[in-house]
Image (cartoon, rainbow over all chains, first blue to last red; front, top):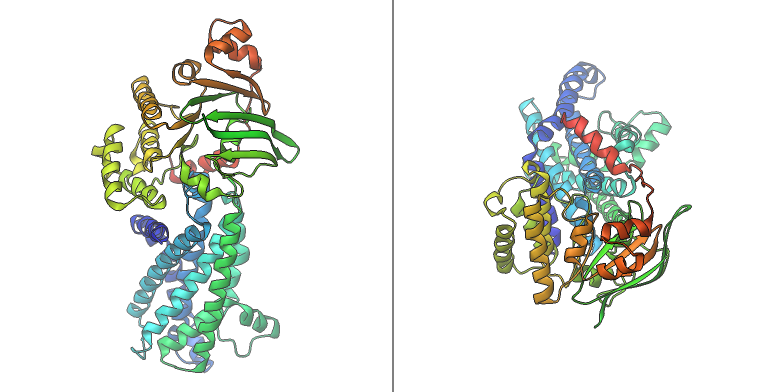
Length: 248
Length: 265
């Protein structure tokens, strides 16, 4: 347990000391928030869907979370190349504890990043409708962070160097973001796109977060929680299996 | 004397390349063994297998009485290691690197603090304990890694070219410490080096490998006798030939270059 804690703490320390990374990874969500949030607002309203900023803010928050979470997991590649990974691999600690510490640490920093984006959204005019349900939004944010952090850990365990990084970003992370309900409503989409969105784990997180922030308590939220929770558990198992196969 | 390391007919195959070709040797408890060989002879591969980070293709191994493949945790508890490449977290301080290691090895909290102070003091880094490792020179990083390897008081120490990049003062300081530890606490030491003079001075016995096989074994004096040479360096060349070996650039080297470019250093 102490091993999980110290590796979690390591991720937190690394995050809090890297100002440039913290600020740098805010750039993208802020850009999306202002360009899309305000740019598409009039069209969205004219199409009869209401306030686009209200709609898209949870999606933008999710964006801030997933990029950070995946990146945090992929950091394993850096640890491998710069040697620190060996230090953890020869330690008398179960691989699962190492993966848990890293992944929870990565998820926590991604959650913090998400909270910063949420605050920026609030400053931009986003409103939380039901303060009692807002903590539930944090739960969804953490589950999104955990799922994507575990995905990052799994990828980082398999890739040998950073050359595959662009591949992962362009063919996995960006598609997962765009083919979700983060930027547009699912209703009225062409069938293939609708199916893709439904299969995408991020959609459940964004839907849950959106309901929690908008104050729409419903059974859907329970289903969203179940799907994300189960997926997080499975992915943690997969990533610790892949991690335990690492040879340096 | 009981054997701390036993290696029997170990083979390691990477694709078509046979890095270790039925290598066998054993190291008695409490002794210091130098493990010598030209670049690419299989030294680091052997150490990786002994330290559980690489699985052998075939052969039998016992480290501190355990099988590294089947009982990795028991083996990991028994040894400490200084790797050939850096293995510190640059973004943490020297103290935090020690603390992280101590926690991973289950060192009790109070002892962890005392030992960290003693060890950092010994390698001359106590004053710099709160500085980030990325601000350290190569030699300071090396000293920190050596201090860290002793933190959980292992019975067996692997040192893969531990004195690379250190000045003669630090070198002799550290070897004195290692020898003292070995004598007083029966710590077994297994190290590699390209410094023949260092191997002769520090090691009880020497194993020379080349092309994944043991080519000679014994004390420095007996190796010189076997080859009819006057110095260990001459004996080494007589045993392994004059060809210059090349190490292929691995992904680690490419990454290092990338990072340098990235950070503008």
